[in-house]
Length: 241
Ligand code: LP5
Ligand code: MN
Image 1 (cartoon, rainbow, N blue to C red):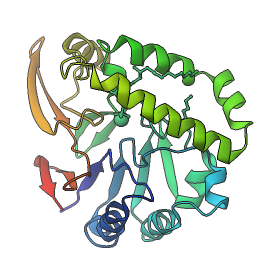
Image 2 (cartoon, helix red, strand yellow):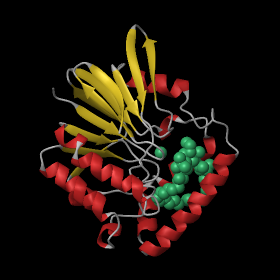
Image 3 (tube, rainbow, N blue to C red):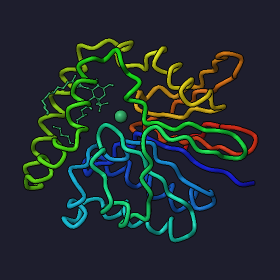
């Protein structure tokens, strides 16, 4: 049966080689039989710019994605808060297509809304301010004009600041805001399925909004145990690696 796969929040980095290994294995096995693979953000622990490719970063991941797309599996990628600098250079090298956040697609006869999920964490006011600032074109151009090594050092420092900030935020603040979810579902005319990541709280939530049933599927991260969502004509299922 035809099916598509959804993953997010792998946070691939050189210091956690087991995640890279698990992902490459997943691409060579499970993903090869799918119609499409959707990576809904934070594939990487961070992405400092597409010139990281020429600098030899993440070769195994890029080669395995390119191989998968060459096999005829469509590979789609959405930006996460950590890898929103992924751009055309990565698309070309990996044979992937970047989707905007959010994106509404039709799969197996159903409207499916996709997002990374961070934009829905509206109670996290400090993060949303930070997000607005760094997602602007002006900031991006200025940041990318700096040398790669300086950018990496800057991001490492930012990661420390972010971890400090998170340590005093409540779990509730760092979850999606209910009104933000309902407003987004309304804006997209109540799709049957909504799939996102970011919060690392894998779950299925069912809503009945203005007479429409919408399922919100939250993807898990890959720190301890990788997982993916499989969607076919019968619906969604979470699977462990
Ligand atoms: O990623 P995660 O889940 O650990 O935390 C996020 C939010 N943090 C972030 C920051 C990233 O993790 C850092 C790496 C990003 C690399 C991007 C590439 C280039 C960017 C360079 C930027 C200058 O996204 C965290 C949320 C959490 O999700 C849950 O939703 O709470 O948000 C924060 O912790 C942000 C702080 O609250 C506010 C920012 C503090 C640092 C300010 C430094 C000044 C930067 C000025 C930039 C113009
Ligand atoms: Mn994220």
